[in-house]
Length: 269
Length: 269
Image 1: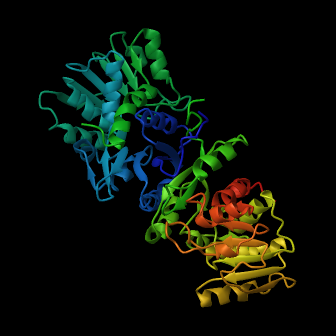
Image 2: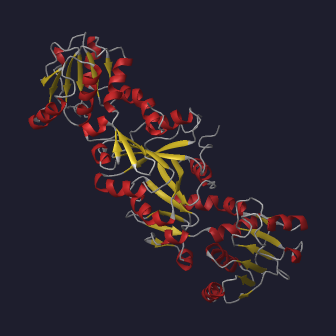
Image 3: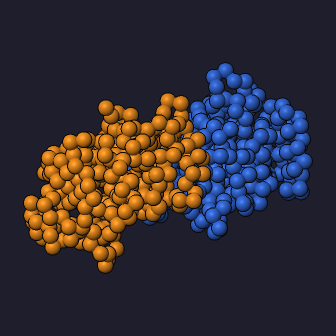
């Protein structure tokens, strides 16, 4: 079939909104995943700067054939404010990465990054149940992963963030999630952990300081990173050299693809 | 190539805005025409109701990778109001069907329907120069075709519209376009004409009264219709039975495809 031959006036439209946008993989991946179900749908990229986000959302939402939205960096918190309803985890985190129409034309939001991360490491052989995790980064991605790791059954979660106020606020909010798990402040030293996760931007740029003391990694540790570009961060490369099983940001995205598609199409649950 | 495999975060986005939208052919046709030039571009449909149009346009325009817009029924006049600059013919008609970015992020508009109609009938063998045309309908499409027919060199243009005020207003505005042509009020009777054009909605629905007295058609007349759905209106069918050369709305669209693409990409002129 010629490329784009299936595109027509009846095509249902989905968008991914981010800044930057050139790096996103969802347009082809989500479109093809939806098409595989026989749906005449397409996902197109929309490059929107933060000061323009609210006005963009208010306007584009008027399109009656726009059925869903992926919000990516830096719009996940701003996107949540446009949700009329949201899942429990999206409300807990105050952010949304996926939105679909409610019956009255508003948006229903979810935040799937944490689940995507956990499903990704499970697919790569990591069993989080009973594990001792070190999570570096208490921001948006870190918060989502912290919640998902507790829900997945880690027995201990150490969180490290140089911003003490942000770290304390997250630990406070996580305290009621699962009483059988221990949540405490950690450090960049992964000694004794079974799972090590970087949820900071450190590793995107050459020369970034390592978010984790890589000389303390041991081969029994599963090492994950949320960074998708580069596909392999220095942390992931160091872990692989040691023989650690790993997951980069690409694996986190791949693991989320079906759940994003199913949420956007209202097929989940 | 798998369908949509070329779609990615760097794809430049174009939209066609209309109500209804399901019938439009531009998404695949314009996308493929742009792709044929090696451009990573896509055109997607956007279904927007008239009360939502201005807010939609204000919002969607914030997307920095949105490079162009086709406005179709009923938004062509409202679209013109969103153009910072426009071609002479768009200003003359007060409407725009195509818009591309200006260097400072606004929109530059054009109205190509009239040229598209004329290029279509030329491709079908009609030579408008020196001809005597009957145009039925003095609305948006009719006005664009009237201007284009005068610019193409018809010697006589009879315009018929049951709304006398609308008819008079159009004739008044056309009076200065080409002084060597005679513009006057016509009737539904095509006797003596070489070109007969329906630019009204009559013929879209079964049972519509004919916009032209078909019993007065003769095989020397070229008969055109702006209606694209159905592809063959009762007027076009009657003309074909008589042996008249014809062009339906689909031909008008096909003739415009290259000029729409080139305008949207800034390649024309």
